[in-house]
Image (cartoon, rainbow over all chains, first blue to last red):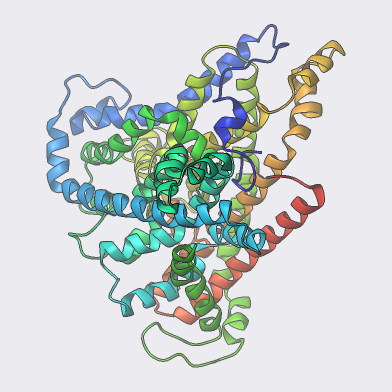
Length: 298
Length: 270
């Protein structure tokens, strides 16, 4: 019941915050289970760890002992990669894109979700289905007309143009998620405030928004992750090398003249680390948000 | 609600409708579009590149319906049966999912490299070989994907009534039996949803192919989305590319429709 945010309450509420709740009958757990789980753990983390190691080695060390812990940590790889790959500009552009996208999606999805959760509009069931369909529509299908439309509107090769596309792509899902969160907030809160003479705006800002804050945080995280990692739209709509977000900055560097895997590793780590830290700090909310989506693309 | 409708119309609905129109034209993206009826679709039917790409999408779909689904189900089920470190495993499995596709591609390009990686040890050029390239790209994509399935399946499995397991255990059912007769039926809505979504995403898959092989070597990894991309932006055949897009939309349309029908019939809340 947590795969799409149609009518179910937010995942956290339903699952008791993912509390460990072992089956009463687990009894003896064969050590084989742990062995297999650890093998999967190695499969998931091993490549990341080796990638991190490679970013701190010299090229010759990587060639002779690719699997070992780096003997001396070559932090200078990071400085070199930062400069050669232009990662600073990429991160800055991505920061602009992520902040712009998240802010816009929160406003767009916030308004729509509030309207859908409270106004009992006719045809809202159809609209929900439309949003579901439109958030699983192939981007490639409308990519070509969108590209030429953007060229005409002078939105091609501009960060703002990229942000607007992300608004369109990410807001349907965010709306559904936020709506399913908002319908769990009791209406009595708002009615009580109205009885006390609060205007509609005050109700919105002092009652609804504070209560919906966790929902907003979830959609902000999911949207930020999607926008930061997005590749297809970014590579299609941004040509100017000074405007490339970090995903295409890294791609350009990797595809370019460099054959130095240690520098690719360092540039990659520079891109991964911000998201990794954010994820580790807020992993529970991340996992709830993303897994309640059933979206995200393969 | 208005901002949502406006932005959706501008970015999604409008261009989608335009794409339907352009697929019946010879538009090159810049000049005027001339109506040529079904010509693009007729050409598609006889296009060897198109059939090659479609076939790869089908293979890709089968791979993703089997390998990550099995890993996801196993991982999630195993996690419901352990007492310790469950959250730790969950976070670790999920971690590759938050890594950007371009980085994942680079990680595995380095690891498999025929110069310094596994490819050198095994004397194999994974991404340069006609036969190995497609499974390799799918494997790399799966690395970033299966942990997501573990998390979603685990959430569904934690909603299963524990009394059912208790009763089954009293009847002498082992872990495998319990999985088949209790877990799998109980999470059927989630299972079906992810299965159908897997089909849709398999036909849309772009990033890994584009970054790792660009459809090569010699079309060995070409899929519909890379074919579309090439037709639209390299060959400047926007009309023809739109027709490819229509085929992709049709496939996902059929899958979404099937899903909505099943959902209604079985009364699922998913």
